[in-house]
Structures are given as C-alpha cells and as structure tokens.
Length: 394
Image (tube, rainbow, N blue to C red; front, side, top):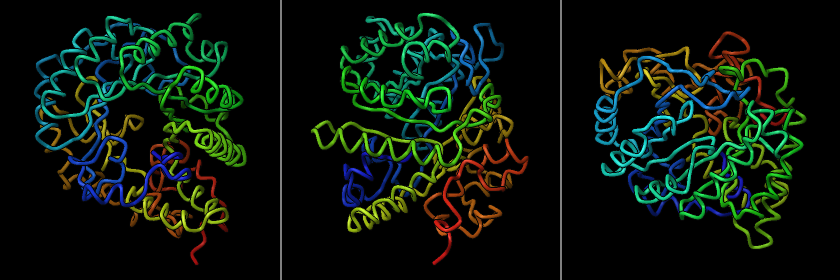
C-alpha cells in the first residue's frame, strides 16, 4: 500500500514510526506498513462462495457450494498459530466472507488472541444487526468494495440493485461506529468515476479509500486489455494526489491509499521533489521503511481449503497447506526456494527492474502480474509506468 495522504499530504512523519521502534506488535494499524520485522498481514479467503458475479473477481467466485473449506475448528487452530507467530492482522475475505455463518465467531476468536480483525466485503449482507455485532467484536476495519457510481457498480457486480445494497451496508457500519472504507479497483471501465468516489467520501463521511491497480488474476485476467496504459495511470495518480490535497486543504484529512503498484511510491517522491524538496526527503525515508511489494514476506494468503499463497492473487503458487503444517512453519521454511527468494527479491528480478534506482523502495513490484503477462515471475512488472529516465541510476 502507498499512502497518498500519509506521504504526499504529510499525515505521517518518519518520527511517528520510529517512536514505536518499528515493531509490528506496537505500531498502530495505519503504520504497520512501515514495520521493520514485517510479520505478515494474513488475507484469509475463508470461503470461495459469493452472492455476486463480479467481472474482475480474482477468485472466480460463484454463488455455489464449494467443498473442502476449512472447518470452524480447523480455522481456530490456524488462528492460534497465526497469533502465536505474531501476525498482526487477519483479513477475512472471500468470495464473500459474510456467507460463512461462523464469521463473527472466528473474528471474535482472532481479536481475543490479540490480532486485529478486518473484513473485506461487498457490503450487501451487512444488516444493522450484523454491524452491531461487528462493533461488539471489536473489528478494526471493514473495507467495502465499490466500483463507481450506481450504473458502473452494478455492471461490475453483475447483479442489479447492488449499489444501493452496498451503500446500505456501508452506512450500517458507519452508524454502528465501525471504521469503514471503500475499495475501488481501477480500469478503463470506471476510471472516469474516480472524481465521483471522492465526492462520495465527502457526502457519506467515509474516512478511508483504497484505489487498487488491476491485477490479472481469476476473472480479472480477462481484463488485461481494459487496464490503464502507463500515461493513463500517471494521470490517475496525479488526480488522486490532487483530490487528496484538496481534501486536506479543506480540513478533511481522509486516509487515501493506492494498492498493488509500488511504482506509485517513487512517482509521489519525484513529484514532491519538484514541489517540496524537504518533504520529499521525509517521504523517501518512509518509502525505504515500507520496502515496497511484500508478497510472500509482509503479506500472505490462506485459501478456503488451507493452501498458503504469497498473496491473494497468486493462486497458482502454493507453499503448503495449514491442514498438514502450521502456517508459521510453512512461512519460515526457506528450503523452499521461492519462499526464500520472496523474502528478498532484489537479486532475482530481471530486465529494467534489476538496474532500477528504486528497487529498494519498490521491491520489484508485483510478481503475479509479471508472471500473468510474460510467464516469468522475475520479469519486470508490465504495470510499472516509470520512464527509463526516471529509473536510471544516478
């Protein structure tokens, strides 16, 4: 994640991180990306089933029964191991996580063991009663996927009326006192709706929004041609920075982030170098703490069937299964060559990545996207939009 508000608008200073000694167990949630120990944030796709038909779904979910999901007791065993291992966050995802009746029980189980519990959801199933229960549990955050205005969102989700149900779920969370935010995956079908999303953040008093770059996985792999080109991506990031700055200038310090393209970090730095060199130096320090893409290192994924992946998009790669070995043992077993290499990708990336001046702060960007396009996990991420001049070593 690249915090536009944290970096470009100065919402976070290096000292804010250093006062916690950069220890994950001590850092507040909004500073976890700057931890030194990089204990993994875990995305658990607790079910593959979903009540919608999203055209960009990375898990290719349908509203059908999928066999072999971890049972409640197996999930509790997994959560105990994750908590003992020091994983700071467990993100309950899917499919649609609210389609599992034991979601509240398992979220409570994680919170009781000192983990931060987060839900990633389409929002359509969050009633006032469920929102109240989530508040009682002590959820840290609920991220709700929204793809644009009403017509755009319903097109992406494949079910008429989804926008209104999603907004109802979001409002139920907000009214229950839960921190709630929007998750928006950008492509050519909805990029024009980005200004409307910023307007919605104001109108609905939504404190957080994550703008996701498209990753070519699941049904999303069919949208490669609909991804923004490099010039369009640069215009998008400039727009997001401009709109975030406008919010801050008007006293609305919302948390705005971009996700899944760590070229955004150097791009922000280079813009600040022109506008505010002193702030640019602080941003570079924060980017070095962040370390860029963290698939297989600072983020991991466990599927509904217990398979362990480097991240939620890279499902063709499995390190093992929590039914056979604890996650902690799988994650630290560097006899697996890929497990070892993902802990530090810098010696292995190829092409323009290998000679890039920003490798220390980008981490080689997204390996799943590189593999999806080229078939080679170590080739450059095709979504990197930095020019040859911008990445050239001084």
